[in-house]
Image 1: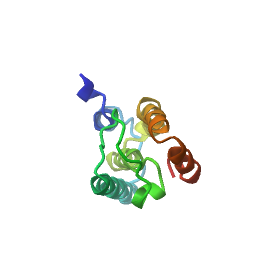
Image 2: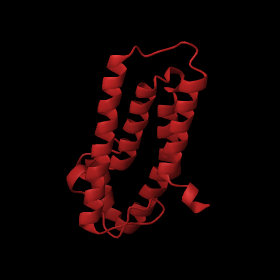
Image 3: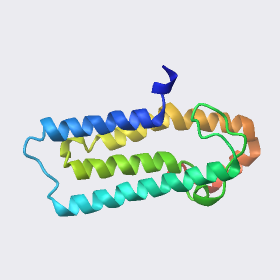
Length: 149
């Protein structure tokens, strides 16, 4: 069951809810067509780019990407010099982009709910593990780089 408690599974569940709302409970509401598709595409592309940059840093630093494990190194280079959570930020951008692309107006509140779930379920425990493992290095990093943007 531990494989169910991973961010991509949560993201998939939120995307499924947005799809369901768009398909079965749209109530005639719409974001308005082409602009929503364009902005949604930009958000999805930006989210994928952030994730790709983060994955490359994890690989370059040879440390774990698994959320429930403590990494062997504190990554502060690349995209991690701009945001402490580029993969979660990418997940959020992808969800927001898909909500726009699916024209799921009533699913828009899922985006801040997703951020809340990810923060409580993954980010805060990860940061606690990194505080214990990297002590002063993480404290300096935390002061220098924001959690999201």
